Structures are given as structure tokens and as C-alpha cells.
View (tube, helix red, strand yellow):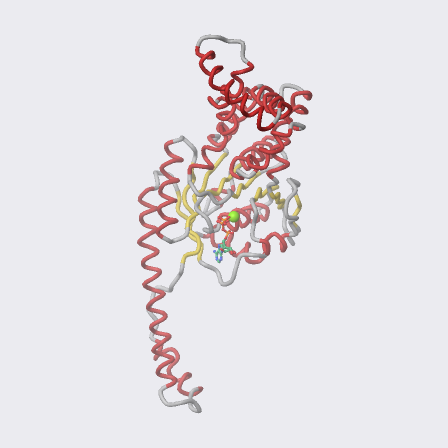
Length: 373
Ligand SMILES: Nc1ncnc2c1ncn2[C@@H]1O[C@H](COP(=O)(O)OP(=O)(O)OP(=O)(O)O)[C@@H](O)[C@H]1O
Ligand SMILES: [Mg+2]
């Protein structure tokens, strides 16, 4: 198996990396290559650049898989844009012990107020949606494009987030006035009862009743959240899953890539390797502008001011030398990523293409680079 074919042989590929390095482009390019190889593929994407979404015919949001028409393609390419608001509602429905609890939560004003901020945590919502699509068994391959993270750990820690919230002291504290237990609870009862009295005074008792109902109903979801987060982590660690770290040849991105490699290893997550995207490429031999273009430049520059052709050739030579220095610097930076890779992990490269990656032909070119890398 050559190049990225090794990646496409999995059931789930998760592209992680710092912001703007090409995670969305690489995820879509890999998905397209797998579809061209005859597989039924879903690319689950998070807020792709508008031009890419438009040219793929993707609506802005919807949690609906949309088939992308690819000419002469033996497989199928589908894409889905994460809709965090839908995802959180589906999730509550799924983990609630019964329909009545789900309704109590979904209709609760406190839930409606915090739902937006839970849904705003795109990385968490992505892992939830991912679990649904992978376990549906509809797809030969799912490629996940992860959201830009401020902290590289956000995404890997995401699965347990609501389980931790429901297990937290804050929950206990809010529930304390409604608990029957004694002992330590009595201490909480004293403090929180006072605060509750104050809150009741400010917001009214109807608000407090709603708050307590929310916390009581939400606490019942703890087991559901925990089981789900364990299932998501098991899916991350599964043999059919491959994480791939996408990076650009900048020092910040290289640092994040090294960090991700370490974290994935520490958590026992299967990482196939690193895709170094957006590299400046140069040929093996330094060209001689005078030998290549001298005669042509002098011929064309006859009517121009004296020395125009010489100046132009000198500038071309300088630009080429700068590009070579940049490529060499990038190579040195990427060596640091390679040093952080473990045995069995692969390193793929893709060049910085002209223009942006916003249509099928460019995605295809990007994918072909990865397959031959
Ligand atoms: N190999 C490439 N050659 C040229 N342009 C590229 C390449 N890869 C990505 N781009 C461009 O770089 C920009 C960022 O790419 P992309 O949106 O895929 O990155 P991202 O990692 O998903 O970003 P974010 O973290 O914001 O989600 C886009 O404009 C895209 O078209
Ligand atoms: Mg993106």
C-alpha cells in the first residue's frame, strides 16, 4: 500500500491539528480519494470555508448527510456539516432514561439557556455526532475534520465533558437544599440554603423551582453520559480508527503537532502519522536565471529602460534563493515533528497549491499528492 492509501483503509480517520493548517481540506481530499477508490465515505466537517461548502453544494448546517456529485466515481462521497444545536437535543433524547425525562429537560428554560453554550463547544458536539454516524454502520469510511482548538487537549478530553459536569460538586451543591442526607450535606445545606434564599429573593421562586428541576432531571443523565463517553473513547481506540495529525511547516503548528503526538500516545489512541500540508516545494537544482531566461529577457526588454532585463533576472534569482531558504527552513522544522513520531507512524507531505482548496478538482489534486507522498 502506498501513501495515504494506508489511511483510507480504516473505518474512521480523525484529522487533528492547530487552526488553519488544512484539516478541513485534507479531510475532504482524503474522503474524495476513498470514494474514487470505490468506498462509501462520509466527511463530517465543522464549518468549512464558505467557498468549499458552496462548491460541494453543502448547506450551512443541518446534520444531514449530503451526497456530493463526483464525476466517474465508483464509490460515494457524502458530507455532513455539524449542527451543534441539533446534536445536543438528540443527545439528551438518547441518554435520558425515558421520554418524560427528556421532555422535562428539553422544555426547561435553564436548559434552553445553557444549551447554546454546550452546543458552542464544537469539539464536544463533534465527538457525539461522530459516535452516531460511525455506529450507524452506513459508511465504509468516516473522515472527521475537527474544529480549530485553542487547547490541543480540548478535543481529546471532549467525550467525558457532560459526564464530568453531572458528576461535579457544583451539581451536588445546587441539589443540596433538596437532598435528604445528613452529615456533610448539612454543611452544604446551611450555605446553599442561604444563597438559595437570596436567589429566590432576586429571581423569584418560579425560577428556583425551574433551576432545581433542571438539576434533578439532568443528574439522572449521568449514567447515560458516562456510558456514551466510554463508548466514544473505545471508538477512538478501536483498531479501525486512525488519528492523523495535520500540520503546516510553521513553528507554532510544529509545536502543536509534537504535542498532539505525545498526547495521543499517552492516551493509547491509534495515530497513523503526520500530514505536513502547505509546504513550499523547490526543485533539486538551483536554476541559473541568466542561462534560462537571459536571451529571452534581453529580447523582450529592448524597448525598455537600460538594465531592465538584468534587474529582472537578478530579482528572479533572489526570489528563488529566498524560496529555497524557506523550503530548507520548513524541512528543518518538520524534522522536529518526525523525531517526535513513534515506530510504525508515517509522514506524508502536500505542497502549498496555487490558490485555495475550494473545489473538487483542487481537492483531487491535494488527495493525489497525499496518495503519492
Ligand atoms: N495544500 C494547500 N494548498 C493551498 N491552500 C491550502 C492547502 N491546504 C489548505 N489550504 C487553504 O488554507 C486555508 C485553511 O485551510 P482549511 O480550512 O482546510 O484549514 P483548517 O485547519 O480546517 O482551518 P480551521 O482550523 O480554521 O478549521 C483555506 O483557505 C484552504 O483553501
Ligand atoms: Mg476547518
